[in-house]
Every structure is written in structure tokens, then in C-alpha cells.
Image 1 (tube, helix red, strand yellow):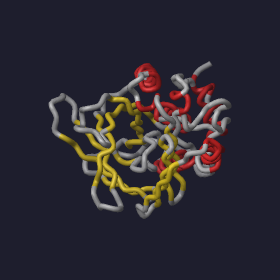
Image 2: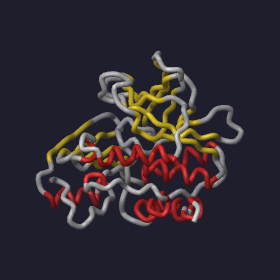
Image 3: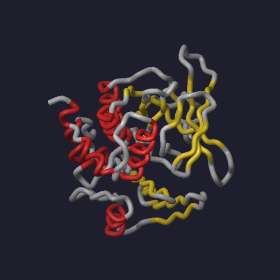
Image 4: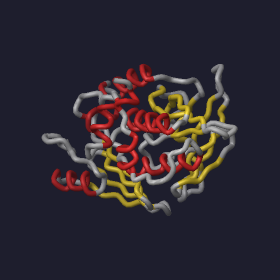
Length: 276
């Protein structure tokens, strides 16, 4: 069975609630990207359980589309890749270094997956990414153009370039902070293409390496209209569109599981303990 044979575009579009066009145009790309970002939660429960999540199309369909689960960047962006190709877009993979909270743009390995999307009739490709799982993540794709700024889903982003010693230009996605009016780097990347076998290696490393933050504690995120929610270990954070942040500690396992279902839309597997 081929990847596209295993992928059900109709079921995917119903899952994200997209009832718009199915043409390979900019309006469809933006609409599907935003609908996906709002429909699927970010979560790493498989990795905390000691398992690298499957990136096979049939497993992504079962877990994210037909099951009450989410996933992290490799799962989310692989699923979007399948959907965009089924809609007629030309897609290739990218890989970035997360610079949010890092000492320098090259102090971390390339472990984040993004997509480069060609839109028929458009003079430039677009950066698409539904798997970053942070309050500064993209909600709509943006042109892959130096200095480009975009606003979508209530968030502002821009692309800049940084000088470095490598042979390829180094791009940085930056998010605008409503509270400080500053721009904060999210991840750095080049335009070198990556393929499915590369992401299989990244996925295994991130999920199983004992030094990986994703293998130690549950990390849940969800974007809804007007709010971004995060459960990082026992800390539950809500960030509103105006930048207002509220936090509280969750100390009861039953409450954590209720939040997972009601706020994040995640059915926690039987026997899994969210609070450790």
C-alpha cells in the first residue's frame, strides 16, 4: 500500500473541520493549515512511554484522525504533507534548530520538522509548520522570503537571515511578543531538503534519547481561537491573544486527566500517569 493509498483526504478534512475549496491555491493552503493547527493538539505521550511514535500514514490516520490523540512535529507535519500532496501541492521537507531559549542559533541539533510548499501560480514557496507546539508557532503559512512578515490566527511572524560560516543561508523564524513588542527567534534553518528517512532518525532520537526533554515528562499544547494552552509536567499555562498569561500547578492526577480530555482533546492511554 502506498502512502497516499493509506491516507484518506476526506476523513482528514472532516477531522479538521475544513469545508472550503480543495484546489492547490493559496486560500486552500492557508485555510487547511489554520484548521489543522486548531484541530490537533501537540503531545508527546508516546515518547514519555518510551516509544518512538510511528510516522506511517496508516498509523497517523488511526492516531490523529480517527483517534482522540495529537502528536509532535514529525507526526503533525507528515500528516499535513500527505494532505497537501493529495490536494495537488508540491511539498518538500525542512529541518530546523530550535533557538527559543538557546545560547546561539547553532547550539542545538536540527530536530524540528517543517515543510516547504510550492503553490501553483505563486512566485515564491511558503513555509508551513503545524508541529512546533509553542505560543510562538505558525498558525498560517508564510512566504519564504527574507524580511517577509505575516499575520495569521492572531500571531505575527517574520523571517530574517543570520550570518554564519556554512555554505547555505541561515534563516530564522521570529515571533512577535504582544507584551514586550519584541521579536523572538523560534527556530533556525537552511533550505536543504530532508526526506522521510531523515525524519525517522530524528524521531527516534527525540523520542528515546534519555537526554531529550520529550522523553522525560508529558508536554501538551493546544491552540484555540483566542487562547494557547500548555501543560508542561504539572504546570498548566493559559496565554490569551492579548498576551495575558495565567499559570497554576496541577497536583491531582484526576484533574490532569480531565484537563487532557476537556481542554486539550487528548484521550490519555489507560495506565499512563500524567503527573509522574
